[in-house]
View (cartoon, rainbow, N blue to C red):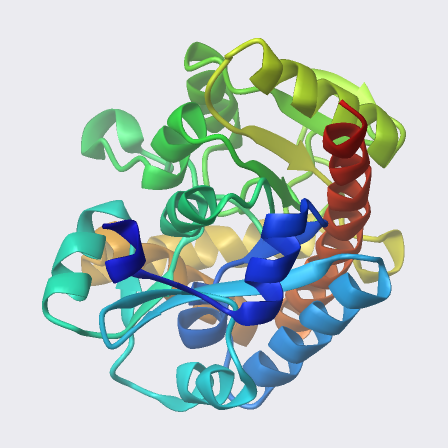
Length: 308
């Protein structure tokens, strides 16, 4: 029955069947996160970085109602240019599929589809989380609920700094989601390496991390992991600059009554404008860094499963 909905690229399918390393990639960053043509250049470079580090990339999207795992060049171009691609989270999947529409996957829906396909490692920019003021609005990203339930490890540069990082980490702790700092004790904050909050555990290598991930699922401790991989120092933004940009963007969003899933794209767009485009460059570089770590992690995890 699943085959009716799921379409896996032959190269990706072969890798999954053979237990070879595969890394899932989201598509919202292509359709809604960056302008054309930077979005396509970024997507192709990310896929190449994953290949160079020993794994197979699997960019995920919904096209004409099909859950696609692994896209060709034409499909990537379409996602990067089209205005008819919906932002697809868990709640949207059944309707986009039933109506045969096109959807770009968020962290939550990418995790769902990766899990359906048998992919265990996912690289993204930053996870969603608890929005500032959530004690009044209850605006909490579906990414966090998915992390509590779906067996996919997510390599990211932390939570987007437009969020309430403290409450995001509290939520993850309550739901038993391990938050790991990759070569850092501090949980990163997307554009900056520091957030003021500690990760649960620091790991110093992909091999050490792969052992912990396999142990988690061997023990039937369902749910994902958040692997905070800090943006490289040379691409980190100045803390005060980005904090001021975020505060100004949040104020404008509040004044314009922007809420829900429209909030993040609006805020990131405003921050890009306020920082003169520097935030977009940082965003791209941190995604590349996450892809590299995710590929190496996938290689190590694949070895463990093959030797089990």
